Image 1 (cartoon, rainbow, N blue to C red):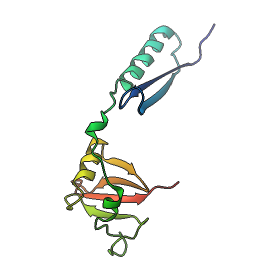
Image 2 (image 1 turned 45 degrees about the vertical axis):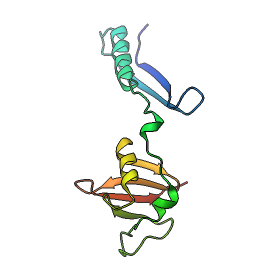
Image 3 (image 1 turned 180 degrees about the vertical axis):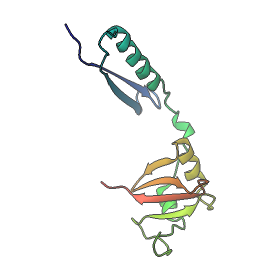
Image 4 (image 1 turned 90 degrees about the vertical axis):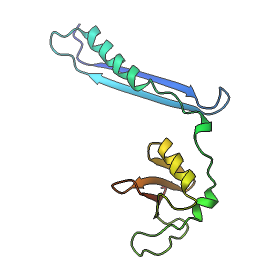
Length: 140
């Protein structure tokens, strides 16, 4: 029998806040085409090793993620990109990272690798030194 390709898939689910709460889930697949005389068992094991590394994450305890009030975030002085006027509800905008009232948002974004989706918006850091927070409406 000639094996032309090897596909290996693995997944992992980790409780974020206890077995009855939310879970963090991930699933990955890798595919390889073994060389003419390559040991297929060795190829499979290498693929599994890569997947095991990718799945070695640990869920962040919910206590580490700050609680944010969406109404308070809407009250921050968001500025539009084009007109530089105050951004209206549902409109993209930006603020400085050190804006008073944005401290918890910045902390939550840092814990979420610089990107956070909350309510109707996606928040990201921007600028060379990550000194801005941008928001854009989430497309539903």
